Length: 399
Image (tube, rainbow, N blue to C red):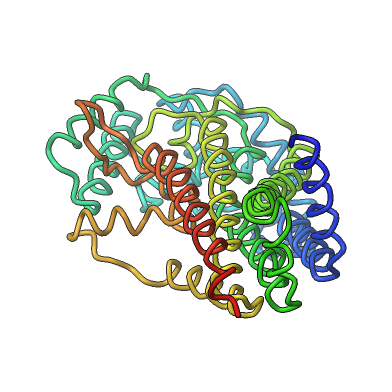
């Protein structure tokens, strides 16, 4: 039996990769992922500078020059505490936000961007202190929590988690991890599109070429063939996720290095109540992306068997993606909204870390990420089971 399964697995895997559309789709997605990570190199940035005689002019720099400068300045700030001493050093930089050719006033830019996200008003940099900064920061998180209609228990829970964070916070250079975290949503969309294109014919091709009835008459046709096809489809979804994230990790690590895994997530997602590092956030998103890839693969295989048409499968999956991207359920409808936002295109977004809504279970509070880690495998199993029922019935109803 094991020998038969191994042979069938190899055959189905080879048959999948013999399709021209699979190679084209993989090549297009790989190229798009590379361009997504390197697109800044094609840009030019204009910067207002002040010359030695007091005149102002625009200084142009390429995307690569800007990346090298920002990377160097951020590394110089690595390990600095965001306290009154650092704010005092930034006073000269904050005045008019004037840049010079020498770049001396540019070294605080990463800190400036962080602070302006909390204070919103650059004028506060002139007289605000660290105590004001952290008080306003906590207020920002609280207000963001109110927009999600958190209960009193949830508010108290997150405030307790935030109190564990030592202040003042320490800035850490973490460009690679921040870039990968920012790309989780486009990565998820590319994986879904790749699965929709490549797995749409997993079962539909058998119906269209009229070989399905022949397979069902074979010794392994009713059970083994189905499980092999579904396993190959799910394995392909996992490989798609590994491909997309592998390209993203490789380019980011090559450009920025791998430092900063333990940098606080709050330094990137300012209103996040989670006491996580940015590296841990990336690993959470990567793990959920793998589970989402398995779920989407099972869905594609189920639709392929149910609809019996490549085009119909792609249309349904792309339609679902667009629907979950643009359709919004009001957060006042808490339960329905939380359930809707468990969709992969909603969960795989770095700003989802601002969502403090939880599900109480046996005295514990489960976040949306923990719920997704349970829901995705369960729904994957459901699609596998539904596909199996449909596959067995097709022998009777298929013709």
